[in-house]
Length: 330
Image 1 (cartoon, rainbow, N blue to C red):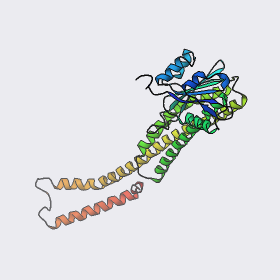
Image 2 (image 1 turned 90 degrees about the vertical axis):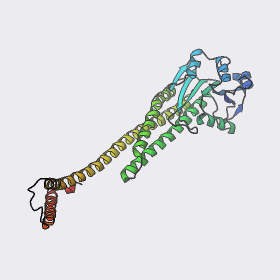
Image 3 (image 1 turned 30 degrees about the horizontal axis):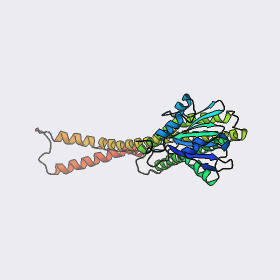
Image 4 (image 1 turned 180 degrees about the horizontal axis):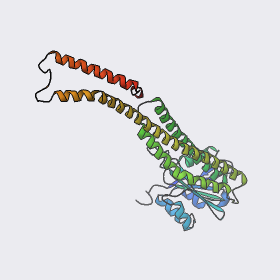
């Protein structure tokens, strides 16, 4: 595919006006931008050739930063680089047909007058910021942008974890009410989702904690306070995720216990029936042997007498078992 026909990796580009709005740019506008024009935000799909060329050349990023931004499976982190900030977060995957636990990487390199964000799959966090800029209600500068981005990412995570908790609560209700359903696979799926989410949310809390304490010339106390509040929401969400995972485990144990109780109850009934009919089976086997000497085998009344004897024997067994309380255990 030639450069003229290759898909563009430029998703969004704005020059912030400092009042919540922004002027959209194309590649030509990005090439002519200067810091005096305002804070530049460039959002790229880093998997496309034109985005790779821009990152390798016109972006003027050092090789270590470029490699960190294009890492295939990056760990969430916040790392100051002089007056700049390398921030990598994980967002809930809300794309159609995707699993929420298959989290999307949001990579940002924030300079005092320029913000570069990279992603491979669409993320609602960055799309929402672009929509806000078009309406004139977006971030005003680089510090406002990075804190808003972190807030958007955590807000979606909170919603996803709440949904997971509601699903666990629904399974708990089904176990308590005895509603039939494939609860074991549902609970196992919820536990796997919680484990997968926690893999990235735990280091993400550390990244937000680092961002809230990092002192950079363009990141003032108000923005660090916003980052600290986002950190608090992230911490509470992580606690909710741990609680949901533990509740799912307890519900699984309760479900297994109830299934074992039902199974044991049915086996107990079968054992009682076996205990009642075992002597009868023994007598029938003894009388059915094909040898001579079986008493009363030519008397018509002997069959009914034997049935009556069996009935009396079964009645006596039931009375003895009931007196011992065995029937009460079922």
